[in-house]
Image 1 (cartoon, rainbow, N blue to C red):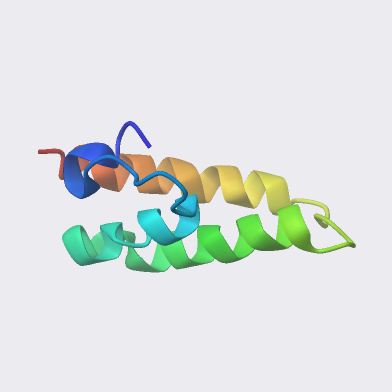
Image 2 (image 1 turned 30 degrees about the vertical axis):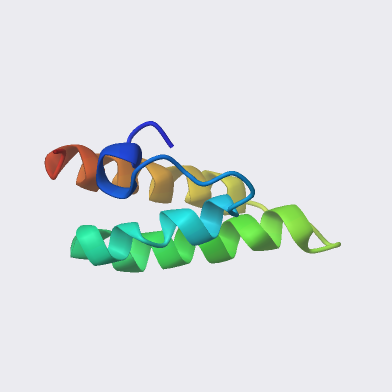
Length: 76
C-alpha cells in the first residue's frame, strides 16, 4: 500500500486491496499484466480450497517484485 498511495491516494476504509490496487494499471500501464496475474494468483492461493500448488507462492513473490520495480520507476 505504501508504494501505491502516491498514485492512488489512501485506500478507502473497507475497499478491497485488490480492487484498490487495480487502479495502478490506469496510472502506470506497465503494471497492467503483472498486476492482473498477481491478483489472480493471490485470490487462488488465498481462497481456493486446494490452495497453492508448488511454486505458486514463489511466482507471486516474483510478480510482486516486478510490480514494486515498476511503481518505484514511475514514482511520483
